[in-house]
Image 1 (cartoon, rainbow, N blue to C red):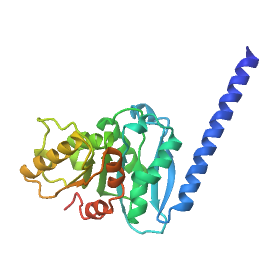
Image 2 (cartoon, one colour):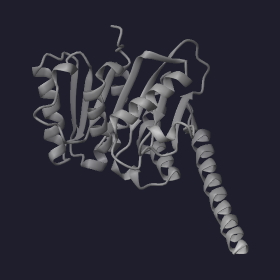
Image 3 (cartoon, rainbow, N blue to C red):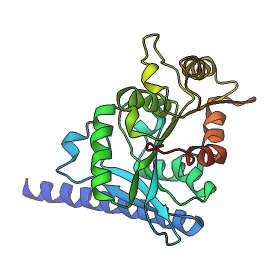
Image 4 (cartoon, one colour):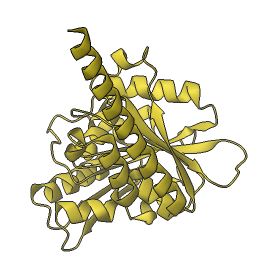
Length: 258
């Protein structure tokens, strides 16, 4: 029995080492390619994990490669449903191509990017706990310039989070999703800049994101943008969202202390 336990432990250790080595190689490859952002793995403290619900142990965080002075804005990017079942390595590679890390690299702005990873749909309660930890840990973040975006499940997660805590964000981009209920509290969002994006051929998601923009405008929100990418389906819409540098330029105009 002892020999079997030792063998299993050794096998588990070798597998874990191989996985970690593979992730580190992927990370090094991304950072050798990126010119503007330096990507790091963020492992949540064990004492914090029980409070983070279905969030995975590892998140991604990126900083400008060039030296900066003063506070930096924070962009939080929430992944879609596929990320629930992907490995951390798969998520890392995808983010560098068509997710939060990608758009930050393309934009080339002085900002910090945080991309949490989840086994399940996004929960505003655990996301708020996560954000509290981030702001306590990374004091260089400008707390008046926190931005949020997501596509598909990430778009719905963005919408749900701003329904709970709109005051935390300077501008948001809920994209490519449906699930806006008729009793959504639009009134609490009239001062929050919102940039909705969706593939023009993304089924019911087109009407949903357009409805969101229309409701916000009707309620008196003067900072609403709506973009439907012509001919783009759901996957193509995701790629368009995370390469739309205009959204980054737009969001950086806003601060919660305005």
